[in-house]
Amino acid sequence: MQFSRLLKIAALTLCAATISFSAQAQLKNSPMHANLPENAQTKDCLMCHQSYDAVAQKTAKLNPNPHSSHRGEQNCTNCHSVKGKPRLECNDCHTFDIKMKGE
Ligand code: HEC
Ligand code: HEC
Ligand code: HEC
Image 1 (cartoon, rainbow, N blue to C red):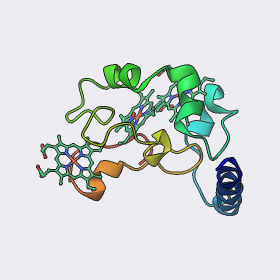
Image 2 (cartoon, helix red, strand yellow):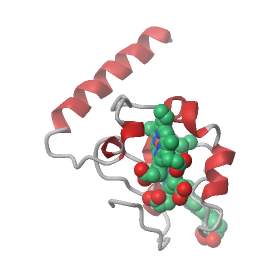
Image 3 (cartoon, rainbow, N blue to C red):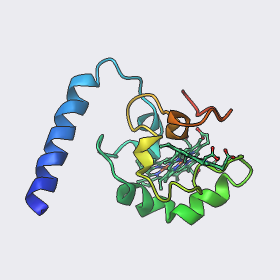
Image 4 (cartoon, helix red, strand yellow):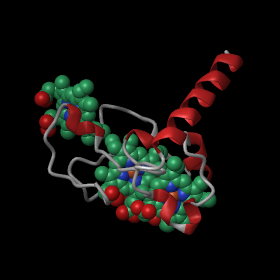
């Protein structure tokens, strides 16, 4: 289990390295995100952002709230990108009129 997770992380890191030249920097642009690994997982984000509930409160005015839905607690980087364009994963199925910064 632990080993396969490490392999996955290694694979993701390799992928990230090959696309990093063309990808547009996003979260990486801000100082507080400068040290994030490119394959950051939700737990890396929640060290500072506390919890899904906490970020959901910040976007309470969005309809629907991207941080509180029937999809539960998805990986933050399904939508936000450390180094690359963000994309609203909800719109794989919906057509919500919500634009992400840098999208
Ligand atoms: C070292 C602490 C830290 C970590 C780790 C961190 N953030 Fe942040 N982030 C902040 C701070 C501080 C702010 C500014 C205050 C706020 O909006 O909460 C911020 C702001 C943001 C914003 C709004 C501003 C912007 O740049 O668009 C987003 C989106 C965000 N973080 C997403 C993430 C995601 C996703 C991760 C994990 C991949 C993450 N953060 C990891 C500290 C952190
Ligand atoms: C894999 C496809 C899929 C994804 C991804 C998805 N949804 Fe849905 N969603 C559905 C289906 C299916 C329904 C139920 C059928 C309906 O009401 O259209 C639904 C219903 C909803 C509804 C209630 C009905 C409506 O359209 O107002 C909301 C709100 C919603 N989703 C929000 C979200 C949000 C927010 C996200 C992203 C965090 C998301 N969905 C991602 C498939 C998806
Ligand atoms: C389904 C897509 C999606 C997921 C998954 C997601 N976010 Fe967001 N997030 C958004 C959208 C949409 C916004 C509002 C537009 C923007 O800021 O680009 C947003 C905004 C934010 C903001 C700025 C809030 C403010 O002050 O305006 C922070 C911080 C943030 N997200 C952190 C996170 C963290 C941390 C996670 C994982 C725990 C996460 N997000 C998961 C879609 C998502």
